[in-house]
Amino acid sequence: MSRMPLPYNPKILELFKHPKNLGKMEDASVSAVAGNPSCGDMITFYLKINDRHVIEKASFESYGCAANIATSSIVTEMVKGLTLEEAWKISWKNVTEAVGGLPSVKFHCGILAVGALKRAIRKYLKQKGLSPSWVQSDLH
Image 1 (cartoon, one colour):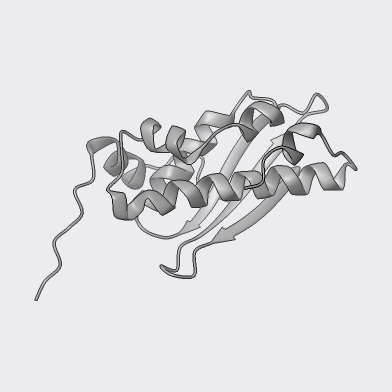
Image 2: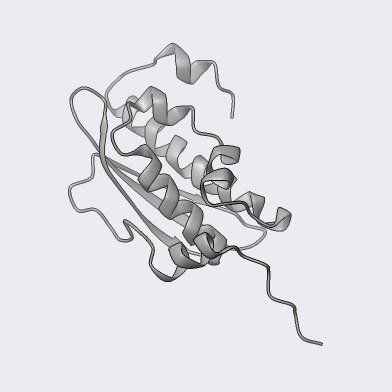
């Protein structure tokens, strides 16, 4: 029995075939890894953050499906130019909307991408000895 391919929209397919900001960032301020043990997807996010806590650049490495690569790619585009606080507010629903929707069985890909972003932000703040209230107010 063969499996039916998932109905990905053209935006997801384009980001999968031509991902933006794919690759390790050598001059990153911080990097963080997130994974999903149930499906095997892994993402490493890299952020270049300036002294004003603005994300200047973002990139990613991914081991995963088309939705994993597309959501990671779009998150790196969404966060450029945002403060850490603004980037922290991005939700998996924002990511899902930005890629034009995901099949419900792939919602976890948006959650994983946002999780990797938030891990990177938390790690950066910890390195700098910062503990802003907006991080404490989000328990995810």
